[in-house]
Length: 584
Image (tube, rainbow, N blue to C red):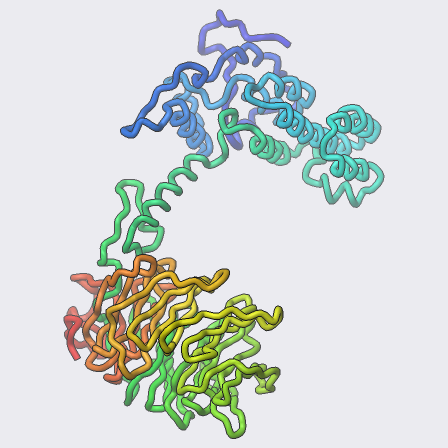
């Protein structure tokens, strides 16, 4: 192989581009000679000399820093900029041996690439064998693609098998010779001699074998930047904004201004105390239930305004809870020791009524498939029904009470229910296994987190406990400050990654804590009666709703000076009222 004359003017020297994608493929040709590159192999990487340290902390190696930037420039398609940075800094992305190796692989010079492979520094024998196997495998498939069966058999015996590795794969390759179906399965992407994409994929696989000092991993700079942003986001105690708000220009830090704390709307529609409310899974609807025996479905518009969609009537007793179907097309409502009704959320039509003769139902929940539902019964049993009302199963599990929460994990494996005054059962019906959360005080309600990792447990002693339920139940945090003496008060998870906990309170306020730290973030006044239930919009982290004995629902948003509302007020079922957040 010939070399480059080092006495030639610099502009005439052959320079192998280190392009990471398209350009190296475009400029390469199967008939193009590779001998003109050998002279460059003597060029060492700058990292072989003394490394400079940059940055205020003294931990960033200049050579690594520049090489990663160069890699990013090439990956973004800025080829001239990448080449200019290499020339000006004297720090090259790849050694001459690596550049030559890459070009030989893309041009299909397999024998030459195997020779060059052994001239690359920092590769041990295991890496050399594994890399050689990948190269020879590509060669094997391309020979078969050209119908050169005898040549493929020879190289399988004389080149691939002697490597002594991946014996199962060697057996599969031998099967390709006699089985066209196996060949199509294993080598369809590798067989065409014109398959530049398959060779680029081969390079990507080879890169995974090499140490990062030899070939920098793809998207390394992007990965480092994303890591830095994630660390800043995770360290932001009040983080409650979308990732799109993160910027490289400044360090990220949210204040409490990202927490919904301003009344943006007061909803009137119920004529008595509102006991329960819940946003739909897609955040586009809000359902509320009341002691006035009605259920209301509210629509959440794109501008954040909430309007009444349906008023659902038919219950003969106060409605203690509602539950959205997984697809948000249907809604369950449970009367107090009465029946469960299933509604079409779009039309408002009642689709079915579930009841047990002589008994009352006290809770309801959907199975994740949306085809079955669970109900708590006053005889302390749990009943499983299909949508048509056929009772499929019933088992002991509940304590008798006015309300008794029930939940199912998203995989359908665990059924969670109150089993004693001070205990919650997590039942795996298939494995016949049960885990218990045991408290010292009476449990009133509980709430399951979005990813089934945590359970919020409301207690009679004015505390809310956070339990981890991933493995064995473990108490994580306690929240205090809200008031509860006689009513059923409900809490919920919410905000970005459900990093906050909100709760109602008998002192007419909404309380918000940081989930992990347990610190009280905000207490929101505004209601004129006890706040029985809260719900945080799962898709809009800046929207929270609260239901009260004052017959109203308050919608909370960000505390902005210039809210885009008519007359700088808030909407009340389409009517604008002035409000500073404390009006009744």
